[in-house]
Length: 58
Image: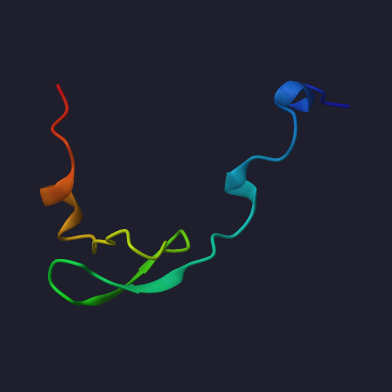
């Protein structure tokens, strides 16, 4: 029996299907789907607009 993965702990998030929620992009107004439940009062950006709002990495 192969026990090399037992120390992995509980099942990882990759093992379950992602739940997507519909949202409207705060920049361009396009309807999109995001893998989290949008919070009221916080902007949601589509895949195209998100890079414009990310902080630059060093």
